[in-house]
Image 1 (cartoon, protein in one colour):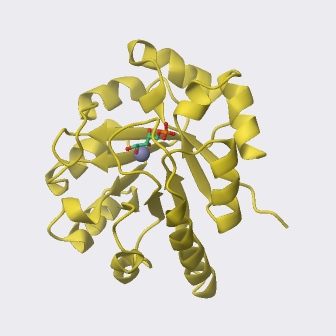
Image 2 (cartoon, rainbow, N blue to C red):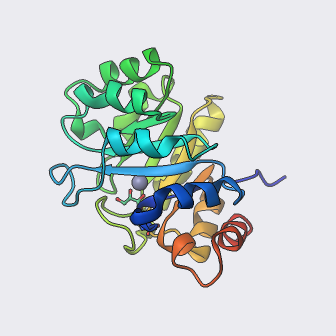
Amino acid sequence: MTKSIKIAPSILSSDFSKLGEVLEELNQSGAEMVHVDVMDGHFVPNITFGPPVIKKIRKYSDLPFDVHLMIAPVHKYIKDFADAGADIITVHPEATDNLLQTIELIKSLGKKAGVSLNPNTSLESIFPVLHLIDLTLIMSVNPGFGGQKFMPEVLSKVKILRQKIDEENLKVEIEIDGGIDFDTGKLAKEAGVDILVSGTTLFAGNDDLKKNIKKLRNC
Ligand code: DX5
Ligand code: ZN
């Protein structure tokens, strides 16, 4: 039986001048969550938005906010993102002095905790916390920008992780982020991901958002 895949559109590729409308469209699109990319111009070479913007746009959405924090140091900002309306808060291990404490803080605020691995970060670095988290976000590009080329070498990480999660009966989900289109999405699904993040393909694709989401789900 094929497992159903979740789709997390990344609003990084949407029109920032009408985020409220974009979120309302996403409510009707069939997407399971909204992927929100937060960048600080320091941890990654690009800047997006922070808690005040997330708080303002939160009321337009009925979907969970999957907030991907590409900021360092991240720990002192976790509460701000929780208060702004994040449902899942994902951090990079390189962005905190104490990953365990950061995960515990996210959980203590009643939020789901995710850890993201850059293409060059080893899979093993996540193993000590795997039983504590809800999500592993496997980066299939170096974070910072939408529209980059998918790095197929990360698929081996996904396969090993899938096997480990299944063998140990863990509840953590695998999400993949970067360069996901209808071809790479299929590869990622076959490797065992649960959630596909996609920006450019969904927002700048040939069809409308709803059709692109359906096409990605069925790829
Ligand atoms: C990249 C971000 C991604 C990005 C994906 O640093 O984490 O979420 O929006 O965009 P696409 O799908 O265009 O690669
Ligand atoms: Zn992201």
